[in-house]
Image (cartoon, rainbow, N blue to C red; front, side, top):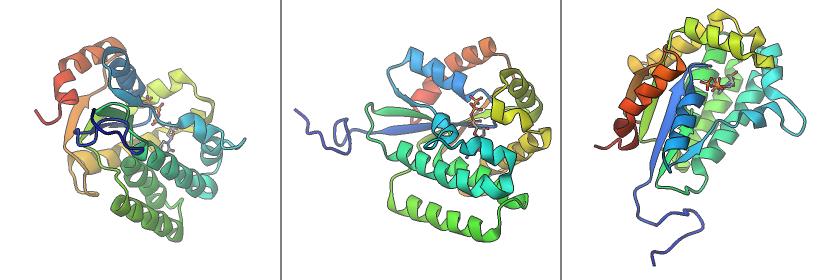
Length: 226
Ligand code: DCP
């Protein structure tokens, strides 16, 4: 029988593939992950949002939306830890699909706080040092990014409809800023190094149409090397 190690629950030497689903807030990442969780046997990791809303009784997500200049660094430090935990967790299937990544946490959300003047340079530099240490010394590699490309207007509508308490404060400008950063990073590729090939799926359509698109793109998503 093939050997198992503590680190990897699947066979040593077997190719492990990591797919990250990326996109703006309320771009439909959860629907995409749910679809693949229900129709395949791959491992699906959703974003650890419940942890961000309750760290030993503290709601970091809520604090950040109330006062991002004060709490942005706190939330992003914790998000970086929870994403590192997700990336390095032993894989239980050769194929893992994740919601977002440590890469977008840094290149999109931390970057946005810094650029908008809500994160002091010294905090940005410390998070950057952490991020660079992590990417150099641990395996947070990604094999494919599936970018759900939406308009900020669509995300704004979906946000209003889902009514997550902390997010009621989110303005259109915030979604536009996140959108611009995603486009610079994954489409123009002028922002930071992109860690993998990118598959772009236009995602402004309703849920039924999106599920059809996931079906159409199923092979391209699940076999990124073919
Ligand atoms: N968030 C953040 N910083 C990050 C990652 C996320 O401030 N590095 C915030 C943005 C949202 C909340 O966390 O308010 C949840 O993030 P997502 O947009 O990733 O999750 P959704 O549930 O909105 O995804 P979707 O609606 O696409 O399924």
